[in-house]
Length: 555
Image (cartoon, rainbow, N blue to C red; front, side, top):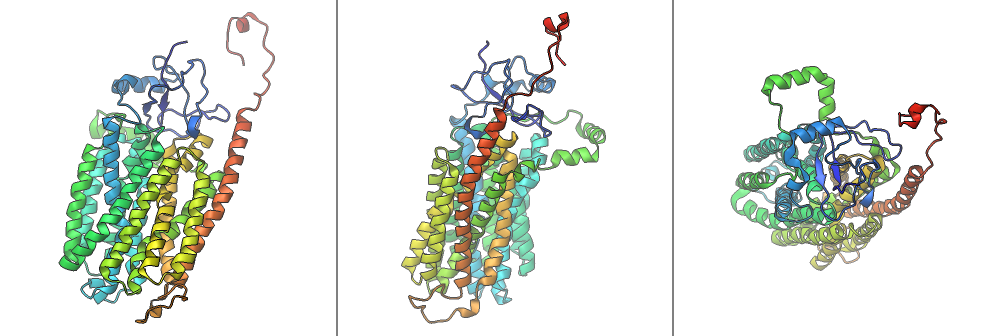
């Protein structure tokens, strides 16, 4: 038996179903990935899939004798992707370079969106704000930040199909979206109407800047496998570090230079930093070259496949796996947790201001909240590679629920607010790291590429970001704010009682759903193993003629 390294065909060749050996209906551009040294040796005669680490793996085959003609053509046209020419996985300069670039993109895309509380506090309390002068409501102002957070969560799923089907467009689309996001901020600097700011600073900036994150999720499995949880934690920590730095910077710029000039500086900084990261970030596997015939060849391809075929190419992918019981429960967990989390990220600074704290102190509270979230990213990112993620979800939901209902509900001083900030931020800050293991579950059980479910889960968090804060805002009673200092026994002071209860109940629902997920996950894998280990159906009696004895295929 020849010694070969395992390769993974991610998306062009149809994947064999782990359940019954039938081919899956999902197809798209493929990539080949070396799993590095020390992996299992593949038997060329064995087409079974390796299910290690609960990650979907297609059929194993010899590199010199691929099992399908589609793979033959790809290897013929993409010799640069031979295993011996690939950079190391889980380490090496190129892998850490990718991680640094992904961290920078996360810092600018999500770090700035999580810092919108500084803008919201400025608009609500500073007479120099154009929205304050127009008496815009708190709900209207919060919609700007809500649209940013929602947009950066929606667009990766919407662009996945296009970038997977046409991988040579990834970098081009990334730079085009970067230019559009910077322009949206520049245009916003000349606007004074809340509705136009919701469109340009909110929705358009969120959608265009979120496009830059799509290649991060697509290329991460190429660079990291065994250490993917840790890599995910490092990347997502960028949003926490951005959430520490940007509120302080934005507070200085807004109070010294004003709203318009702050947006112009932000636009230039976004163009510079994200542009450098996109330029330096590369995939481990070189994408297939575009068609050689140019536009005419592309037109012939479109006519050959038809418009429906083109729509299928750019569709995000099959949603079938998201209807698995464990996928449904995990979607509910991500929704409830994100609803409470994003509400706190938007209103914590305003809560501190309502207690009579200075603008600088309120900004410092928001920065400390995001700083404690960094600790959560690093802890959870490291633990999910070693422990059952549903148990970690359970602990996170319980900690955040108790800290919201007890500490925040009774917080009437800076000390109480900081204690809540530390516990809530560290307990729930790394929850986005669970996107990796929950996606692996769906990919393993459905035998599909994991980025499909990853982007669907990100989309669910985006829905929560759009719906959670507005619901909480409707529970906030601004007319309950008075000049007197709240008493120590007052619960949910300054009109925040309904908002505090909403966050606490959402986190408690996360805790209860995590208990359900623990049971459902064990049941799902036991069912899967039972089906996989079931005896094969009886075959028809073997013919006795000479053709069967000579090895002719049996019917």
